[in-house]
Image (cartoon, rainbow, N blue to C red; front, side, top):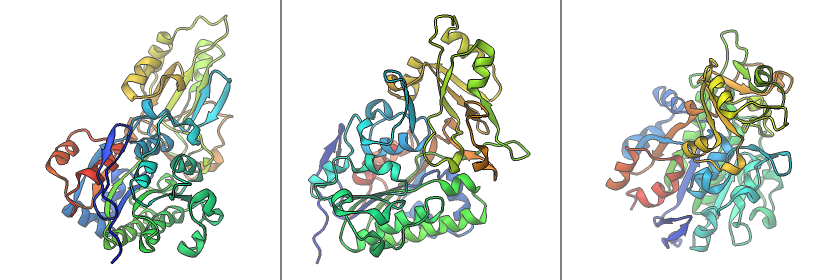
Length: 422
């Protein structure tokens, strides 16, 4: 008989985790608005998730703002909001250096992830992500103490010294293309394979949202994709895992009736209205432009710094709030408080747009050829609510929390501490 997984408690960032003596698998289904799960279950394509919803728990949780990948994954793996862990977007403007910087490195984290603590407590931790940009964040402090962290995007390059494992292709199959549904399904199959081989018993599996950017919930391609997800859920449950499922953000169509992007070019409009010198930062920006063309529903605005400018933050906020398609505009301190963001990595203003509207910099900044098939994107309040699903019933105190205002970054707490798993 194999040795049961360790039940030794461990602590990280003010939370104590008491995992059950069985495998734990937490899954972040990138871009999975609840409508995707509804559509697939209504058509009989996700019987395992339907069973989890009845025998376990299915509800909703509030994600971190902005509703972007790096922000929310960093919150999930640390158990704290962006104001604490420090990553408030995929991208920010570093006023000290005058550079626009991508936050895809663990060097930007201000607190540790929970994974080294779990590994040191006797769990065999494996983290698999679709996007290589997240791997360094997830692997922080884990490699070198027996943990595993690799991406499906670069699976062929995994080495024991850097990733804690080699021979991933022999274990799971050929490395998939990142712009495919297979990139996400490979992540889930990797988790299954690691459990089957006894290489891990504490999993974080984070997919990519290429399919959700390209397809609506009822599209055949999306339904087939979610059926593939369900097949891996069934295998994880068959291996005895306690499974928690959430998402980093939802997804909505952001286009006009003719299919063209419904964009407010914020930097262009601000410079035209108040004079030159505005800098708009789009924190959705990352290497995967085919997903979204760097267009999302959240922006940071840096006011002009030249002496000739007399514009005030209040003037700009008032004008923005009168602009159709803008749903929120806040000065830095207010936005930091309302959205739990790190003030030193923010602009002077924060702007959010409507459910069907995205914010851009200028027409010439964005390559719209990448999204000619239609634009589905995220970043604002309308993508903030995400699924919150567990394979086992919740204990009464956790059920009460789940029916209140749970956060997606409570997922490890609920999965380890809140499920009634023998």
